Amino acid sequence: MNRVLKLELSDGLKEAKIIAWRVRAGDVVGQNDVISDICTAETLFELRSPFDGVIVDLHHSAGSSVAAGSVIASFAATPSVWFDEGLPYGAPPETYTPPMRL
Image (tube, rainbow, N blue to C red; front, side, top):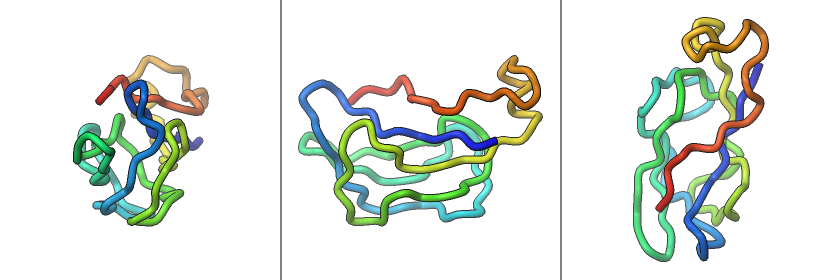
C-alpha cells in the first residue's frame, strides 16, 4: 500500500521550489534520509523522509514550483514498517503530513 508525502509550509508561504531530488523511483529510503532540497522565499532546506520505504513516484521534477499541500512523492512501505508504527497489517495511513514547519 502506498503513502504520499505532502509539502507542508508555514503560514503565509504559498509555494516552494524543488531545487534537486536526491532520490529516484525505486530507491529504498530510511526515516530521516534526505530526499530533496527545497527552497522557499525564506530559506533553503533539506526535506527528509518521514518513514522507511521505497520511492514509488516523484510527482514534480527538479526546478518545479510546488503549491503548499501538494503531493510531492509516493512511497511503498513494507509490512514491518506498518508493525513498527503499531498499525494493523494492510492498514497504513494513506497520507502523511510531516510535523515539520518552517
